[in-house]
Image (spheres, rainbow, N blue to C red):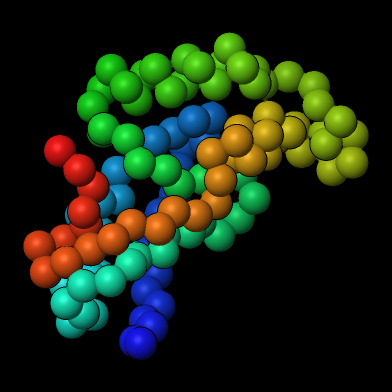
Length: 113
């Protein structure tokens, strides 16, 4: 079994900013020279998350709106401990999760149709 580790550096604007990383991940897979397997994609940090979804403007807007309804910005107990005002960001990322495993083959990530 071959294991390779690659990194993609990104910056977000925060508050449910959605970034499509599909092409970056597929490029890393191409240059890694692997035929098929599983790609484990994870985010470093406690306020980011990774998931699969159709990257289109309406859905991106829906994601922000649902987070504003379920976990609005405001005061959370975490803010008392650190004073950074990002308790909502930690809760949002906890709901989605920090990692995702996606199968791939010579054509790229197998994401469905």
